[in-house]
Length: 140
Length: 140
DNA sequence: ATATAAATGCAACTATGTTGCACTCATTGT
DNA sequence: ACAATGAGTGCAACATAGTTGCATTTATAT
Ligand SMILES: [Mn+2]
Ligand SMILES: [Mn+2]
Ligand SMILES: [Zn+2]
Ligand SMILES: [Zn+2]
Image (spheres, each protein chain N blue to C red):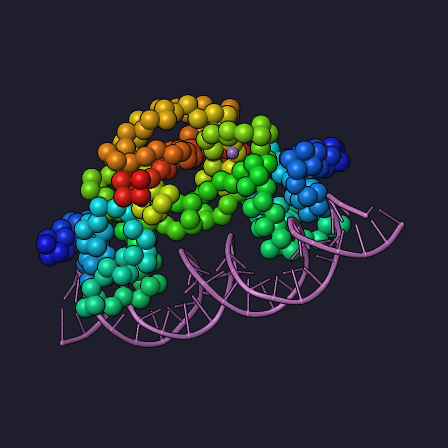
């Protein structure tokens, strides 16, 4: 089961043209295996014993994966970034849900919002960041 | 000009029933004087020399002002909170704009979004947090 | 196999916010 | 006005998340 994600991760990195290292594969596989967005800490905990990885390397690898469009990074009100694999390789404009009980973060399917938001004159629109907050099924 | 904000700030705090201290007045006045949301650091810089204030007190006072509905706190992707005075004492369900050039944050007028967002079954909606990102008039 | 640049590990650092506790002072009641 | 009281404040120490510099290792191209 895990090996499936490892192979997918390796394919994604190789196909993208990046250097294929155990760290990148392991991190991306860990993110592919998740149904939710997880933090730096949580990724660290999910990495196998056989793959010891310095936390700085983890930060830098996450940054690389984000810059190369293989994962995305989610801002939250607890000052902790969460990461999730990009299933579709492109920059998907979508919203996120954060449970105010357990802090779980998941990606919502789409972002049905007009791109021409009413801004002050002279301002230029780039993108929207939207988080719905509430309680997940467990915390309800 | 500044004294106007000081008087308004004092009125707001007194009317709210809270203890009226120089720190609370000064901080709230500084926020009332701003057209944009500003950080803890920026508030510190704007406080007059005559009002030396420990940074911990500043944090705690901001917390008190938020809890009592006199200001609100805005999450951002740079892990820094920004604060803005509440002109209308209640329901500031509104969106924010953040400039990706200069990091300026302003409040947008309203939040024309349905409150019944399509969530997974069993999930309960509480609120929406929305930030539009782009370039401000200066950075365009 | 070797050369090379990219990736990694380690130590030190920064930035933002928090906690505990003693002291001060705004408010209340006399 | 004055004293009593607890909310507010200052200071030191701490916590957490992320960053930077530099020497070493390693994936890849030749
Ligand atoms: Mn997402
Ligand atoms: Mn606002
Ligand atoms: Zn939950
Ligand atoms: Zn700007």
